Length: 363
Image (cartoon, rainbow, N blue to C red; front, side, top):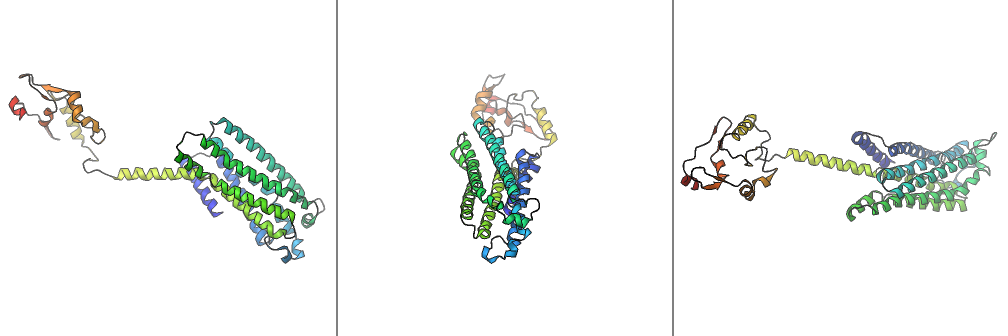
């Protein structure tokens, strides 16, 4: 139960702080959470006060005829049947949101929702009618009457349907993931999030086994029914926790991205100044407009950082793209980049030495 509450807390942290929007499956989680907590409290009352889990021969007849035992048994019967469809609805709504473009999966989701709600509502009505005292009856009289014993005939069909529905819910996303265009490693990672659904199938199988034992031999009913209650509680907690797995994965990716971003901002390279002087930027912009300055040089723009765009500073590109500079007096060509060697830039002044002769340039 504590693990389930932790997962639900993390889920709603993602919903309220990151997504900032409640989806239909989130509301189904809220309903399932209240229902599972209610069932857990009732089971604790059954075990601690009604002494479920104790062998029948260790209980007194007065205790077996008490109204308290009959009332707690009623709460674990009919009302709990409405908790299961809420938990299973979470998965169907989540599949509808994740795999909505798949038409066949939408049909499977709608069919599953209809069948599950129809089954559990019918079980809720049947068990409520069979376990509620008739007018003029006490709770203890209804608990010991023949009408109450009819619920044992519903035990195995209910547990079997739960097993089939859990297997259906577990296999459905695996088939959908196999049709996605993902790498094998990513498919394994996505399938791992839904692997906890296999635990629900195992719990349902154990429930079928214990329900079969109770149906065949009711001589120690109070002892074996405690295992059924514990398995149902475990299945509820695992189901709700599994539905929170995609949100936990999103929270992990979000936190990892924030750590990477903060680490990148904290790294300061020694050759890159975090702040550029406004005067220097202004001076350089003026230098690029002076007569005789190379017009198409990649060095004229201070924003062309070699750490950002290193391809601008490859020598082959400079020679091929920007060509050479021809002296107007002698007609001798020399690389246009030679002009930059004679440019001295400072924040206070800009000095461009005059060219003397071609022989000095060649040196």
